[in-house]
Amino acid sequence: MNYNIISYIIYLPIIFFITIKVGWMFYKNGELFLSNIFGSDLALVKKVNSLLLTGYYLVNLGYSILTIAYWERINHTLELINVMSSTLGKIILLLALLHYNNIFWLKHVTKSNILKQ
Amino acid sequence: MENSKIIIGYLIYLPIVIALTIYVSKVLFKNGKAYMMNIFKGKEEITIATNKLFEIGFYLINIGWALLILKISYYGQNEMNYQTLIEILSKKLGGFSIYLGVMLFLNLLLFFRGMNKSKQSNKTTTTKISLKK
Image (cartoon, rainbow over all chains, first blue to last red; front, side, top):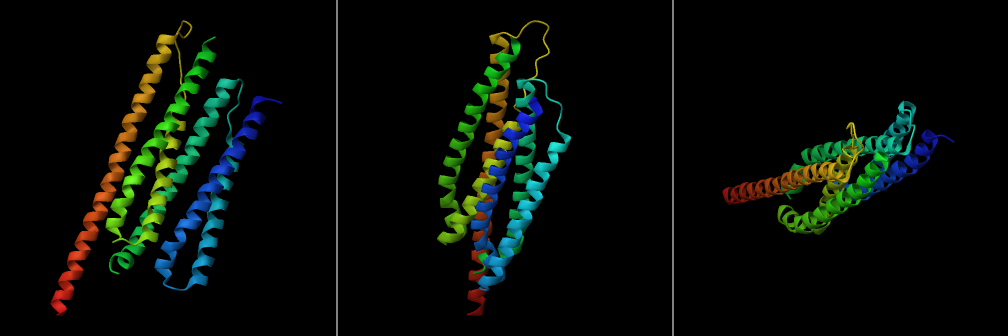
């Protein structure tokens, strides 16, 4: 077993855990905002929310699996830590970027609704 | 071995950075709730949801950045000694603290802007109501 396989075994659970946990938090806290947009149509809100969650999982888990194809060659423990931290950091920053993008758009869509109540 | 010293450096760097991020975000969002209450005029549910969303964003962006700048590269001729390790670590930790401070102020700026906006909308609604009367 070489270092690359060890790093995949450590990397995949971490990134899956982070992505799924964060997506679940968005799912729970975002419902309120969606219900603000769609009014009182609760069934529609639930459906849109679960569609959004599915899309989020597909994009992020897909991307995190895709990065394995472009993994650098690892020769010792130090490189393992370096490569893994930089990859994890990049993906987490990407998540943060997508998240702030979402908040920005939500703010634009819901601002008129919330503040004028 | 120089490699083992770099790993010692990582072992010192990671806990400090993660603890710092958690502490700062706890403080920021415990106090941020009051601002959010003010912005959303005391609506509890949406306050908690917005606060949580911002908190997740804060964690993601800071821990992601901390992991991204983790790598210690050392190209010296001699073996790495503890002095260089401490100097490199101080540079990294200090830089990260300054970055965290900037992020904190950016978030505060967001809160203040939200408060101003909600005050303005309050004024416009009250003037509209008074005009209607």
